[in-house]
Length: 165
Image (tube, rainbow, N blue to C red; front, side, top):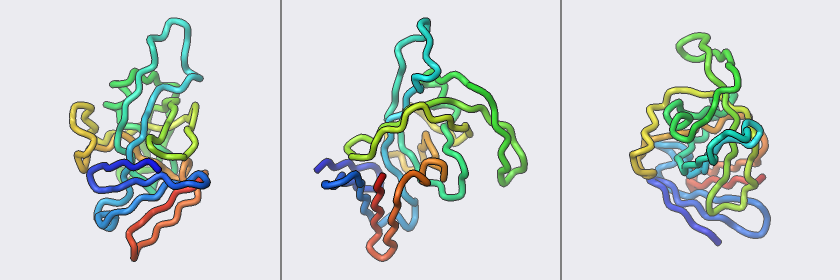
């Protein structure tokens, strides 16, 4: 059984099966935040590309987002190359965002990695020099496009979340 601790969430990988349990009182205040390893998707690699970089960042489950988004600063930090744009309706109106292709892995978890995902971008103010436990330093918002692949059980009274793929 693996265990991770981020700023507010204790993550426990559970066996048997592919599930990930999160437990913490602050779920009510800060939502579900957990570490994710982000790297460039192999679908965008060429022979002249440098070795792919990856970074462990904090991800946030965003049930209000239709698509998963990476912060612009994170995209630049790991050398992601835009592969197009998407127009999305936001609280501020219709906006155009760059798309990227990424791989996502979930450390200390039995969740299957996700490869060559086309995701959107946004400005979350991510700073790669801040520690992972900084409560507002998100590099990734996990949208319903990824959440729809998982069975997510949010138990409010016990302040636990279980994710199965």
